[in-house]
Every structure is written in C-alpha cells, then in structure tokens.
Length: 251
Image (cartoon, rainbow, N blue to C red; front, side, top):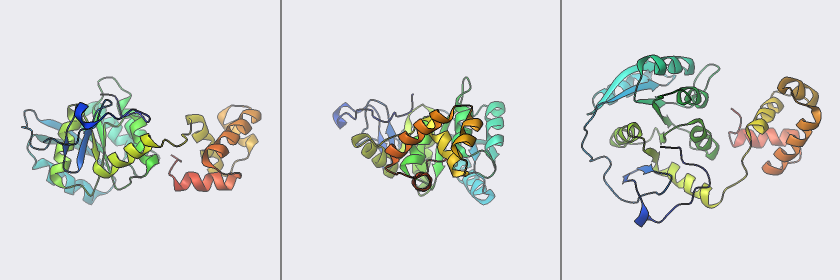
C-alpha cells in the first residue's frame, strides 16, 4: 500500500475500507474507518520483526514485550540506522520497528528511506515519542507504512505491527488527527532542494558556499531562499533556521 499522501481527500466513514482499534487507526489512501476490530482479528501468520532503537533498555523492553505477543517473532535488533539497513537486507523481516531519533549520522528517517527503496523491502513502522507535523510528513515521505507513539498500549502496538505486515497504514490516534488536520488545512511544504539549502543555512554557510556545496549557481540559491522565506513567513536567514528548527524541518 502506498503511504498516505498529503492532500488526499478523506471520504466519509461509510466508504471506509480499513479499521480502527482503540487508539490505532489503520488508514488507506481511500478512507479512514471509524470502527472495527483490528486487534481482535485472528492471528494467522507470524510476523518477523526487526527492532531499531538506540537505547539498549528500550530495545530490551520491546524485545521482551513483543516476543510474548502472539504471531510476532523478533528476529533482530539494531542500535543505529546503518545496522538497521544492513540487518533489514540480510534478515528479511516483514516489519521494521523504527525509532526516529538515532545516534550517529543516520536518523530513523534516512534509515527508513534506505530500507524501503530496495526491492521486496519490509514495511517500516515508526515508533517514537515525536509527533510533530514535520516528523510525520518526513516519515511517510520516506516510505514508512505506519507511525505510532511510544505511549500506546501493548495491544495497540501488537495490532499495528500485524496491520503494517499486511500493508495497512497504522497510525496512533493523535497522529491520525494531525494527518487529517494537515489535509484539511495543508500548509506550505518545502522541496528537497529547499531543505538542502536550509540545512546549509543552519551550518552558517553563505550563498556562495551553499552554491559550491550543492553545485548550483548563487542565483539559484537566492531564488530558493526567497521561496523558503515566503513559505516559512520570515524575512531573514536566522529566522528561517529558527522556524525550520522549531518545525523539525531540518534532517
């Protein structure tokens, strides 16, 4: 199933194709259901799961919890993005449970992108404490099948893992609410190039240095900066970086 795109038209519950269980919302690009029993659905297959979290205690807790769940087999753990990418390719899990904030040079967004871009890639289910619009959008754009918060109850996590394994897009209720609000009132989005330039701004580079680093002309940099300022509602470089940081637009 394709990730939920920003701007999709939400149909009324009567036309819903997927189900909701307590706080976990299974979403298709066609509809959002308002009732059902995802968690009570019988387990008919075993989901092979890879856990990625940079905190050893969290990994151990998740491993113990998920190993006790029916129909879930934890086949590996990763403490960082590169290890998750490598293990996903070698162990062939059905689902990768991915934290967003990882130590090192590769965060959960980039790890998700690299995992899902391969042929016959596993589904990636984000499990994080962050629920900003920017984090949710970036995760979905990177290819994540679902987005859960760590505050979810165990039964909801189990249900989401099984939903993700079958290609359904599982979202925590607060995340689903944000997605719906975003669709009703879509704000400006930055292109990949605009994000690249913002990242260079955050490192204190000037226009000439940014142009050299990105292999584009200074005139192109200035054009992109103007668009960035308009989209973020700012008029200075410092303000653009501040707003981008607040909205977690910087990778």
